[in-house]
Image (cartoon, rainbow, N blue to C red):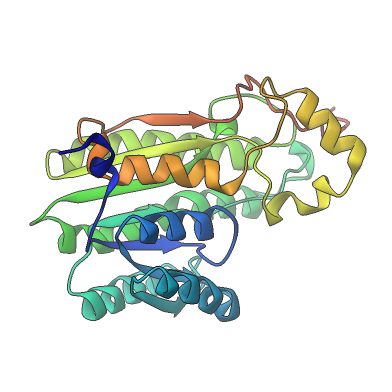
Length: 262
């Protein structure tokens, strides 16, 4: 087999959360371009329909499911609709997540718990719903984590703790599901998506982030999508329980929030 063919995932079915834009959109398109049919979940049906149209132009099938992933019962519905539509599930991309940085003393208990729920419990719930459909043929789960789960930076107590938990969840789940299903994560660095939109419009802050990054640029969604494609495909057939760093070489947060602390 030619080595690049190992990145092909022809006729496999992928679930992607947060698929309407940013990393989720880029990943869904990368999977489709390499042969997968894709079930797309997000809150905005308009954004999902636009991504679905791009997938269909690539010659693959797409299923749009409007879904608030924070209500985890919706993830069970999403999974079942994909299984009913396509007849199988092979790949899960747990992309949905996020939490706004905030001073520790101003972070409420509800916000702290909410960060864990939105970033970790959603991945747990979708994986649990999908695994019974994947167990016979095997498959791959890719968790989109964050570099701040392995680094330090002011303002990231809630989000960073949640992503650290997601990283360890990845390792534990890989042990539980081996050898049939591989589970890996990507520790994403600062990436030019809508989540950073308010920051990136400030040229001074943008330049400071770029200057603090060894590769002297921020990530693009496609940078992360390429990693997800590798981890989802047979190319990474001997990889499980691993965390892939895609962060431009940073070793600490490259976004200075200018928080007062205590």
